[in-house]
Length: 394
Image (tube, rainbow, N blue to C red):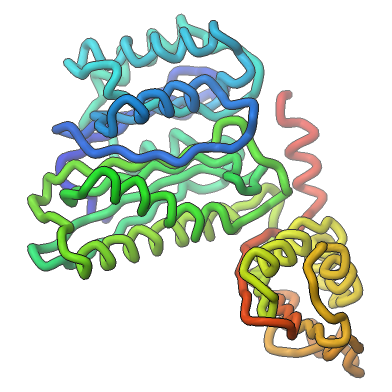
């Protein structure tokens, strides 16, 4: 049973954009105006819903609802795509008595096709009738594309004035690489917050979570994380302590959702937790982690349960980070297999066999140069990933 924040209602219906016999159009509505925040893709080809939601938040950090469709990305669709996106807000907002400009929008699916407005109009009517009759889990299922399971997390945070609740959901399994990833994330909270602080805190949470994962090195046109805080708990985050606690709760929630994205990576069988330490700076540590995490050779080796430290070291060496090769060490699990620029003798196929069979594998890289560190979650690379993406449009 999920502890849903106060003052939110959900809807999810089948509109038939791409999928059959499943919901693909969904909505979360706040019973009152909520402070809204958003973080969006840095891809130059920003989808129409990204453009619309950015403009909406730039005009006012207040929203009443988030409208999401799966199966049609409405990306690279020009002015017509933006026009259709705006029309969908009216289709939903007018019958609900909500100003369409207070509806944030998000889409995910195939790039390049215009939204089929006849299906959207029929779906919007059903969606309005469904408000309050679906659950948060129903919406989490409706936003899925190639995901194999819905990703939904809740949390409670005790503040000085009482308890507040957070609920987050996301979708994403492939085309995942910051900034940000082919992912949509939606968070609702019932705390009273300062809108500027809420936006800044969401940005920090995204950097600490969704921007620290990779599946395949591809960044999408539609990525966004949208967050509402409606104050319906009547508990306000005012003091430094309260703000620190709520920020920590939001970061933990986003980290759990980000982990589930990598856990559900297209064709993936393992989560790779790549930890880099001893770098000259955090950005240099991040650079190393990303090169290792993106490397097809590293990813396929770990999928094949091959302790091929040479691929890891080679990736570190081409990362562009500054370090002394004679100070570099690499460990898989708790076992060091490369130390101070030299391999450690051992029957690593046998010793590491139990470690490499695990669903989660830690790869630790020490550069021995400074105090900079970074952790990246990555997936392995399998034949199934190729099959999924070779057949994605068909």
